[in-house]
Length: 247
Image 1 (cartoon, rainbow, N blue to C red):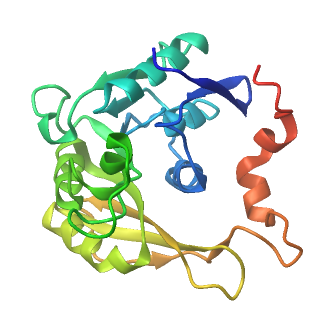
Image 2: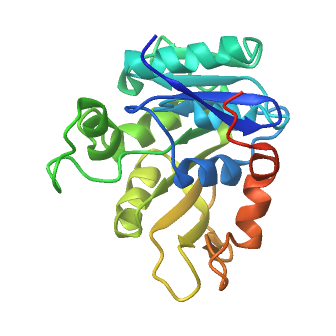
Image 3: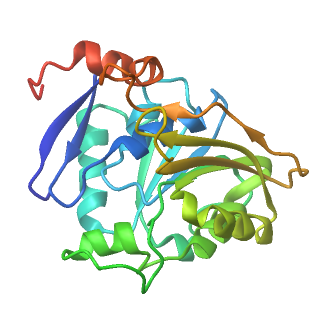
């Protein structure tokens, strides 16, 4: 088990995080955007510390596979699953998402998510740590890899939800369609009203027909500099219950 600290998420759920595997606002937004249903069979690619599966355990989501390639992240997820007594809801799996054929049943999932590397391989300044390079720079997988693997796991009509920087939106749409997934829903996210979006949330459906819905833009902060009403709704019990006690 790597060095870790506890991050209380509310509703009796605690996440284990480390310097290499933590989470940000984008992961919380993606977990909310995907909104798994009670009967959904879910898989989260590149799960890191397991933040998305753990947040889903505060809902009625069905069984969740948390797939992570790095052993240090896998150990954090496994530790959190045991700590929270969630063995019946989350299955941690250490695996490369490009090599899931024969490991996970194809066509058996109704929801796949991933908070992918935002920078294409060979672009931008590389982060110093190996874990950061994998998480942020696409050194271990590409957007095309992600879309093809997600499509393989999904049943017909199943959903793939992800988030990406706006400048890579068209690229993501292309890979989704190559993988027989049609973009159906998007939501842009900005820090505050009047600021350019820094993130876009996307939902695609396996075998879906053309037709895209754009949801109202989400602002992180309101005019008063505090969290917007939507962000307060998303964080809800985390803000109400978290007292910094690392329970």
